[in-house]
Length: 322
Image (cartoon, rainbow, N blue to C red; front, side, top):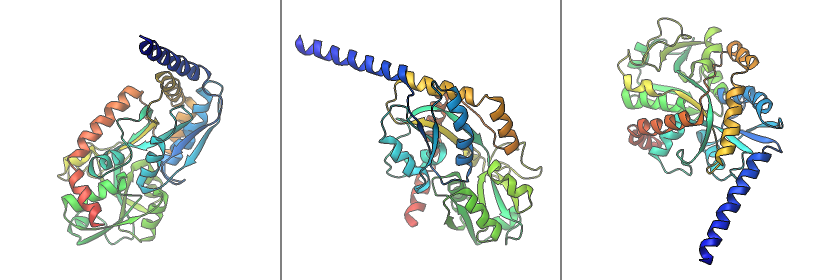
């Protein structure tokens, strides 16, 4: 009987503590972790959202961008899994890349345990080549013996699309040249150091519009409105299964966050991404925002894990060769 009363008291104490935390939250700055170096799509969008997130959170706390690059997003993911679920550390997560890693190698994170808060954006990746590069068309790429691709890590869309298209589907000799940020990989392609890059279209768009890069393929089953007409979809080229690989910039916190905290942050994120000033920035910067509530993000994560499972063996074997 005494033991039962003790357990009930502990449960009540925890409930009161969690409620107090949610009621007082936030009373100090919040760290918004970006898993890549400054300059790429994740960083640019995170920095744009941060001040508006601050605006719609209670007490208007400072939302500080903290870049934690490394291992294609794994470093930040491992870091977040060990943080206190108090709402003072949230992060951007590369949904597709991390889902693939979780299904193909031993990792120190579990996407099913992340406290999902929302989504920043989703985009269609495109493959582009430099205007003075040795390959200028899909036919030339398809007939190439060796292809050098600039990437920001195997578990990123740049790595996944390169491996599954050239290594898995076309059986080409693929050389991956790693970079710390998409901006660095794009600069490398423009210089001619690599044969191509594969990133979300908005990340490539400035270099494409300037004429420095030429889009060759879009990873979708239907043409993306922003991509120039005439650029074939991956489905049209005979690889419809690769159309599922899209950029999913998700936002989440450490495992075990109180539901009230999740609601406070997720509501603020949705309001932030509906702000007219931020939407005007997104249109001008060509960085589309696609917010979602936590329950829909969770469904996307489970779907990604299911999709990536079919490619896991090939990715794992490729990584071992490296």
